[in-house]
Image 1 (cartoon, helix red, strand yellow):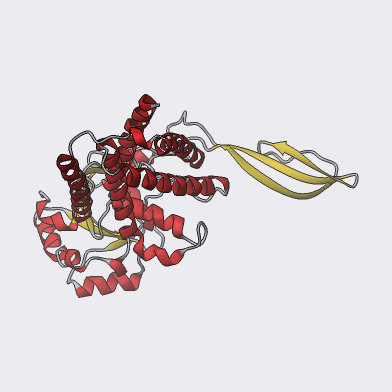
Image 2 (cartoon, rainbow, N blue to C red):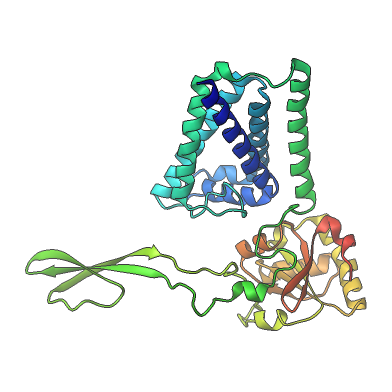
Length: 365
């Protein structure tokens, strides 16, 4: 039993640290996922949405710390009970999301690894199994060091986790796993190969034939049936190929598409603000100097937002800027850069530089 407990201890500890670190690398991204869970369509607890970021940081710091506590053997009873409570909650959450098809990606490993809802649930069930081994074998979980070094290591794991979370919030994720990372080409990310797998959808046609309801299955074509049509249901068997970038666009208020034009530009600065109503004031104050610097160095500068015309005019007047704001999907902009505002330098669609508003001075134009 001792060896099984130690193997479970290593597996669970390492996985919790790894999973927590991936989310701690991008706490804003995890907070967006929590907002999705809190929404009316999923758990219907929208009053928690304003606190999603705070909850995000606390959850992932706790996740990393518990993994560290388990590995070094700090307070085994508290650690195992906490692990059990956390995994039971997340097992319920992933099952709910999968069974009711509410959330397409749990966010367990951020953008590093996308899991389907049922894969996430399976992963949690496996983890629950190993944590139950730890629960019933608590007496075999011994500290690796004496009391003082163990306590110091436990405290350090908490301080380092908290500092790292704060650092990436004030700058950008240290490791960028998204399709808009530096060096990526947005046009290429939006393209679909000719030989890409097509979606497979089954259609279930319901007819009344000779007074009896019958269902006929096809791949989309209308069935040749002598009877009265009642209705049709569909089921996605295989979603086929999805490009890494599928919701990015650059449009004006009249709906004209400038995506191709701007992704072909050299020396383009893009100011991204998914919501001008919630733009950070200190960041907005830096946009005037950025605009002057961009023009001086022969860069074209535009803005991308999901906000309306009134908000655009109000921001330009309030901060004395006059570059044009174009429209893009809010969710896409939140993915492009984890900052409001955030700044990108594009060269024919390739991301050359990307910075948080705190680091605008680091842009090399």
